[in-house]
Amino acid sequence: MDLLLLDSWLKERGEPGYRALQVWEWAARGVPGYDAMTNLPRALRESLDAAVPFSTLAVETQRESSDGTIKVLFRTHDGHPVEAVLMTYRDGRRSLCLSSQSGCPLTCTFCATGQMAFGRNLTAFEILDQALHFRRLGDVNHAVFMGMGEPMLNLDEVLRAARRLPDVGITHRRTTISTVGWLPGLKKFVDEVDEPIRLALSLHAPTDELRSAIMPVNERYPLDAVLAECRKHAARVNRRVFVEYVMLADVNDSVEHARALGELLGPDDFKVNLIPYNPTGMYDGSSRDRIAAFRDALSRARVPVTVRLTRGRDIEAACGQLAAAPRERVGANAR
Ligand code: SAH
Image (cartoon, rainbow, N blue to C red; front, side, top):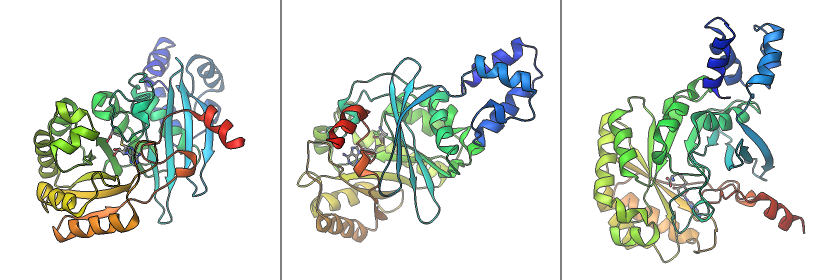
C-alpha cells in the first residue's frame, strides 16, 4: 500500500490525522483488505478500496517447494517483475527474502538475477508489500534483503521499508541487509544507520584478483575499502558482519582459499556463511567434502563459520535463482 498516497487522500477528504495509522496497523497485522478494518466507518472503507490500491503489487504466480518454501512473482503497476520468498524452519523461524530492485544492474557471474534485464529501483511500499503479502499467510519473524537487486543502490527506500518491518513482526535485530559492497551506499549505511540492522557482505573470494573475475563490481570498489567499512559497522553496533561465500568447484573452494580468507577476515569481526552453489549455468557446485574441508580450515583460523541450508531449489527460489521467468519455466515443467 502506498502510504504517501493514503496520507494525502485521507487529508484531502478531511479525515482525522489518526486514520492513516489505523489503516497501517491493520495492514501490518495481515488483514486481507480494507473491509476488515472495523474501526473505520464502512463508507470510508469502501471509498478507500477504490482510491488507494490495497497493494502496490499484483500477484502473478505463487509456487511452493517440497520443503515448504514459497516463492511469489509479483508485478509492479508499470509491469516490472519482482520475486520474494518465504522460508519456514522447524525452529519456528519464518524468514522473508525481499527484493530491493526489479532485476539487478550488477553482473555477478554466478547469479541469475544479473542475467535478466534490469528494471528499476523499488519504492519502500513495493518492498513492504512483498512482506505484507506473506504476513497475510501467517506470522513472519525474520527478513533478509537477499532477493533481487542490490540494496545499497536503493538504500533510502530499503531503509524506509526496513524501519516499518517491526510493525509486521520483524525486529531490526532479525533484519539483514546484504550487499556486494557497493561503497557509496555501504558508507552511508555504516555512518547513518543507528538501528541494530544486521549487515551481510557477499564476498565469494579472498583476493581482489579472483573477486574481480567473478564479480565485476570489485573492479570499482576493491576489497580493502569494503572490508574497512564492514569492520567499522561491526565495531559500531558490536555485532559481527555476515560474510556470504558461494562455493564454486575449482574456482574459490580450495583449502588455500580458506586459509587466505581466514587471514583476510580475522577472528573478531565476521561470521562466514558458506553457500552451496545453486545451478544457474556457469559453474559447478563444490562437493560436500570440499565444503566441509573449507569449513574446517576456516574454523582452524578461528573464524566462525556455518554452511547454509539450501531451500526452494526445486522452484528456483534458492539464492541466486530469482530471475522472474515463471511462464517459460512452468511450461517446461509441465511438459
Ligand atoms: N545484491 C545483494 C543482495 C542479493 S543477496 C548481494 O549480492 O549481497 C543474494 C545472495 O545469493 C548473494 O550472497 C549472492 O552472492 C548469492 N548468490 C548469487 N548467486 C548464487 C548461486 N547461484 N548460488 C548460491 N548463492 C548465490
